[in-house]
Amino acid sequence: MLSAAAVLAGLLLNSTLGWTWADPIAGLVIAAVAVREGREAWRGDACKKPVGSLTSEDTDACSCC
Image (tube, rainbow, N blue to C red; front, side, top):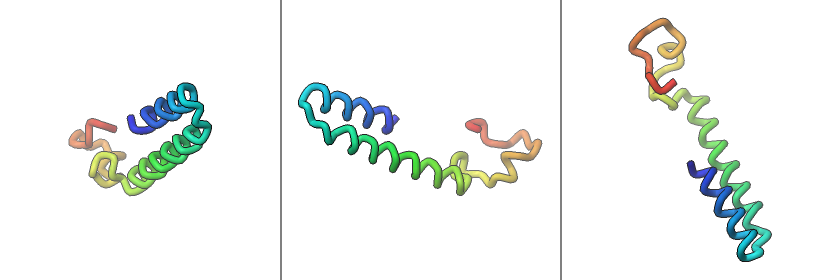
């Protein structure tokens, strides 16, 4: 959601006010969000459960994945 807001803000600022620097700033925000999401996925923080419990046939696994 934050990345979509960054894209929208960058586009609006660039098109309405002519701030050409808004697009690269929005890109940096999107990159930061992607890095944060990647770190969470790498650690297995998406569901706050260990990866082993998500890959097993356990029915108690997180429903978000």
